[in-house]
Each structure stands twice: as C-alpha cells, then as structure tokens.
Image 1 (cartoon, rainbow, N blue to C red):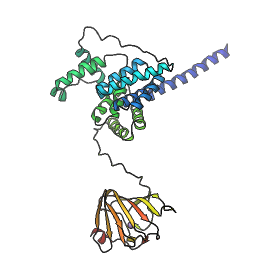
Image 2: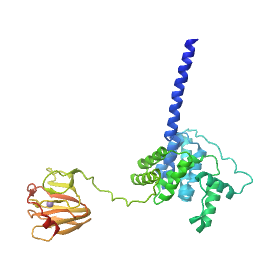
Image 3: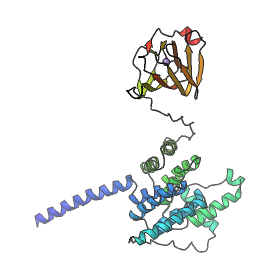
Image 4: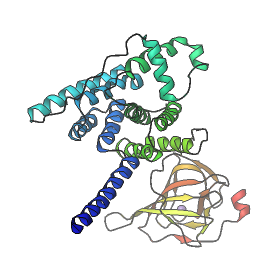
Length: 371
Ligand code: MN
C-alpha cells in the first residue's frame, strides 16, 4: 500500500515535470504546423512556386488540415494580391492531387461557422478590427480615403477575419510572414508585430519567424525583418537604414607589416603557382590608409571595387579612384595606392609575380598624400 502510494506520488512528480516541460515549450517556440505556415505564407507572398510546393507538402505532412492551408492562402490575397493568392491555391490543388495519388490521407479540417446573424459585415468587421488591434482605427489615411477604411473593415476584418477555421494568432503569423518576405512594407510589418503580440505571440516566437525568413527566403529580407522587430522590442520608431553595399569578397585579415600606413585588410584570393604566375588579392584600406612607395618587377593591375582611393606614380600627380576604375601599373615603376582621407577604398590587386616579389621603398609622407 505504502509502496503504491509512493509510486503514485512519483508518477505525479514525473507528470508535473513533463507537463511543465510541454507548457514551457508551447510558450517558447512555434509548433511544427506554425513553422510550416510561416514558410507557406512567405513563399506564396513572394510567388516562389517551387519552394511553395515543398512548403505545402511539409505543412500537410506536419498535420495542417486542407481547410487551414486553403484559408491561409485565401487570407494572403488581402496582403499579397489576388494573383499571388490564386497561383498559390492552384498549386495547393495540384499538391493535394499528387498526395492523394501517393496515398496520403490529408485531414479535411473544419469549415468556418456561418457569420454572426443580425449584424452587417461592416459591424462585424469594425468589432473584429478593434478587438484584434486593441485600438480604434481611424483618421489619417482612413479619413483621406474612406473607401479603403470601408473595405478593410467590411472585407478584411469582416469577411476574412470573421471566418473561424483559423484563430487570430495563426492569422497574424500568416500576415507577418508574408509582409516579412515582401519589400517596402516595413510600416505594416511593424504594426503587425504589435498585433501579433496583442494576440498571444511572444517576441521569441516573432524572432523565430524572422529566423525562418532568414534561412528560407533570404538574408537581406531577414535582416530588415529583424531590425523592424528590434524597433518594436525597444519601443523606438523604425527608420530604414540605407543598406550597406554587400561586399563582394570578405575583408580577410588585417595587414600586419610596416609596408602599409594606417589600417588595411587583405584577402588573398589567388596564390601564384606554376600555371598562373599571378597573385590576386582583395585589399580594403580604411580612410587615410595607404601603401608605402613600392614597385612590382612584373607590373600590377588594380580594379577599384568600392569607396574612394588614390593611385600615384613617382613624378606624376595622384589619381582619384572610384568604383569601376582600372589602373595598370607598369613594371618597375614606383607608385603607391590607398584610401582617401574620409572614405575607405576597396581594390582587387592582380600582381604579376613572374619577375620577382614586390620591392618596398620609403613611406608616403603626409605632404605627398595630401598634395
Ligand atoms: Mn602596387
């Protein structure tokens, strides 16, 4: 008897641990169905059909019902337009046919209940909009163009959000994922992060959506979506930063010789060998950085990739170099190259190593550099 009682207590403890674990997990991360919905919504909004088909298969495999996935793609027309929504629905039709042929029994799911009786769609939609966003929407653009206010209320929040075969939290996952995958809708993405939080999504879950966008859609869209999310977390307005030009080659290692003045970085792309007697390196000069005077016994070619730089041969005036400029340094002619005082400079240096290594000479004085 005592033994049984102990076993019972033990089971309760185990059960509590397991339950607590499940509870924490469900609060922390998106479930497999929700993760699939992120990918489906993002690809449908982007119109990436091959990837969408895979995502639809994954989602159905994860247990999303046909009704839920259909509803996801129907809702998307309000955010990505009818053409994307219809293309996605056509693809769903063929994915479902394929799966049926292969013997998969996808769950039909439930159909939405009828809309509430005795209310106009505008009343239903206005109530839904206020409940969903937690605020009364009006003024501004809605006053300027009352038709868009009417269509949003009646149609989006009435007709679409009034269908209960998807809950509102899931509907926000759909909207956020679609907006995160699209360009130029950051203000809407920002406000939907807020609406998502209001409907039970945690910032960890929002961050998970962004990670899925980063890994599946692309890094740049992911970066923007993350910056917008950070602005919500910090409660600061989001202002789009000018995205930095993507560097073509990684910066490489800091150059640690006294042949350079200031800070410069080298990524050696090609080492000279028996078939190619040339060295190719990507050099990044920080503002003010430059080489010493030097010459190459086999000559050198410089391709300017970015920023503003200088090139000067002994006895000639210095040349200003910008992205796209090409310099041919003749063999054995002393010269130097580097960045301008206030901008970095990135160059590809193609050095002919046939007749021997670079010969380093004296420093470029500030007077020479500034002349
Ligand atoms: Mn050189």
